[in-house]
Image (cartoon, rainbow, N blue to C red; front, side, top):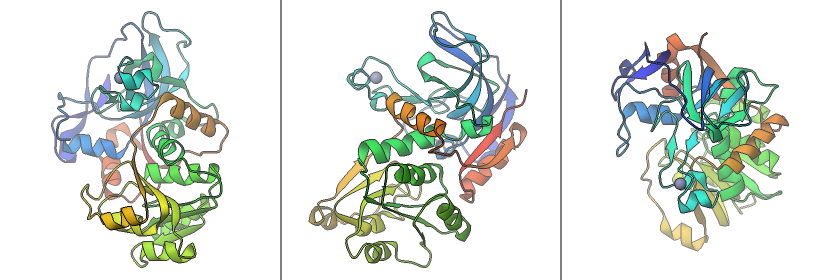
Length: 345
Ligand code: ZN
């Protein structure tokens, strides 16, 4: 089969399209013929190399995918060849204390497609049965590939971890990225009374207003923490969604209301911000970590997509042969929404 392959860690020159033997589903596994895959920040981290995560090369990246069931391993029930499906990108052991508690994404042996095992940027992929979900019928393959990881992550952040309630206010940094774009939609769906987003791009701010943001702040010209306090009568917002890290952390602390919750799922600008601990205790803030999601959260966000309450946002779709261009656009940060790679055949 054709696949995007990393030959080692490095820049885009380690990425090419090559061939691998077709995978074969074992007991409890499903072989999916992938038609569209989507990129995440994770794919850049995997290409660059993540300390403590050893990778066997050649490696197939990609955590998000849509395709059709091609074959079922022994014992698989509830699916048939030809079913159009999307993949829950997280894999778990099923037997540790967290898995037994329904918290797959806290599994002590947690794995992600395209990071710890072969990913979706290939004509075929084998995954456990529990990772396979029916794709929403009204979406194109490209749209269906564009929501699983980012929308599930945003759902867990806002709904499960921050426990956003109707009438509350939210600040979301860096709109246009996958997680923040879904966080905007999920905050609206959860009944937030005020959703403020930030970006350094006029175009992205305009798109965010179309998607339902109340206020869109250009962080190049505005002190975000100060402006959010002004907008809220000096109170601040109940919830801050911060996946940017070093560049936004002080603004997050400044923008949070007393007893506010700051939820983080990443640090694309750097993992070690200056932390003003006095602000954390004085305001009695909760700093919440979050990553990926459970099957319950995936099911909830899939339902919201099916009801068209959450809309997949595709920035651009690329041919598999142009996968390097897709990575370049991801790395540039220029896009609004997800970058999709079409898998031919
Ligand atoms: Zn486990």
